[in-house]
Image (cartoon, rainbow, N blue to C red; front, top):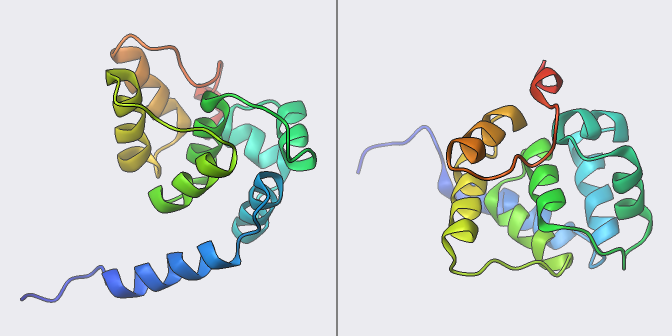
Length: 141
């Protein structure tokens, strides 16, 4: 066994600690991620392309029903690791099916979460899907 630059055990413990520390409420979980990562609402708008009013509603109303696309964009904007994405989607009551579209979304979430939203939108466009949000090319700078 060769030593790896990536220590899976340390990463598992880090993610586990984050998951255990998160509140049960979706709105409080979103706020907790923003605090943990040092994001303001304005920064999250910039990185996710989700409107300020939607982010405010998601943060203040735990029963606010949103779209899968908004949560997808927030996960990319926050660069949440796949396990943390799953938790956030679950708390907002959003699940994925086995359709090609859903599997594509999950693949992009799992592999491109550290990429800017414009890169994810480009892949979606290349495959004939609508972007997660409009006008985000300039937001990645």
